Length: 250
Image (cartoon, rainbow, N blue to C red; front, side):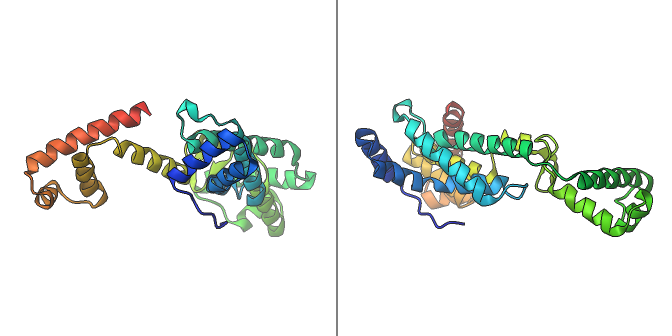
């Protein structure tokens, strides 16, 4: 992973103000550098599926550059929340374009068909995944040809609805594009939680921090803060309700 230093929120706001006032490239470039970690997250999400990480990183970085040029702080949207969907969309388009241009050789296509057909038939017959030698006998191929077909199949571009993500065979790439990647979700949710917590009272913030960040029980929080457990319970309930409202509205 590239070594990138994230800037604090106040510095991001300062750079945004300077960029909007002057449109000097140096401020835009600083903003791009401060958000390249998002390009890393997106590139890691989609890499290993027939497209190199560096290519995906470049596509996402260019999309970030263009998005910052379009960003309007007056809309009240966090910069990271504004640039990320466009970056994902550019990577998605890049995958679609690559799938149109990459075509496996005819021999590989035929091997893939024979091996996959034999594998499915044997799986039904044996109620388990067949071995390479069993596939070879069933398809009238050599074991080397079976291995070649399996390797070609693993490298073959497939549609977004066919490509599964990681070990979850029920989740397709198309579905993953429409959902939040773990790393993306973490930085976005952390930012949302931080902004929501800032709108709680100091007492509510302390109770939430002790209960859910330090994992203390209500009784332990009461002892720590010198109030009754009932008071802690009421404060926690009102704080969670306030957070729910803030998150929902956001």
